[in-house]
Length: 253
Image (tube, rainbow, N blue to C red; front, side, top):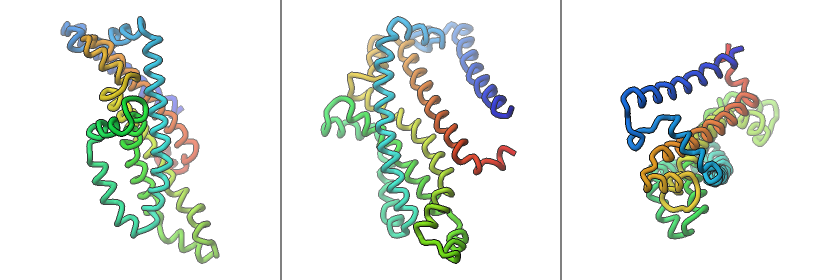
């Protein structure tokens, strides 16, 4: 019942947003080249639906590829940083400094190295989604109460057993929280690269539509990106509830 209610509330809020948007455009007679109504954005996608789906698939798989690399690298580096104080002190400033660099500024460099196309989009998605995973995994491992490790040590458990039985389960809520943030950022990275240097993807489609003053199609691309981002966010939210629901029992109560 609670989940159904939550779903209805979320859906109602989204529908309400689009209704307000639609009514505002109609009421104030805002021209489509300034701000199209949601219905106009959707209508602009229908005549070129096959082409749009090809661009959407390109954006989706490049995003997932970059995100997958970020998960593997982020977990490994986050585990190293979270369990080793020397590595934490040495690498954390470097990670923070690297994350402070605008990823859009790196796209031209990636294009010089790898050319225009898919590879820069994958790498940009990886670079922009990597940091949250590292930070959350490291924080989760570092936040394990030392008393828990001490109890296992007294019981004769090895460091590996303490890590697998205590540290990993304790850090899982942090890990899944980072996945929900990172997947949305991965979309941002992929689209940024497609806008700057690509001939395929939603970002390229939006750039082409903008050059033709087809603003409804630009907003249609934005809506598609939002839908894909929400869908993948929901997937990880469901996995989080299934696998680490114990961490949220007090909230559910």
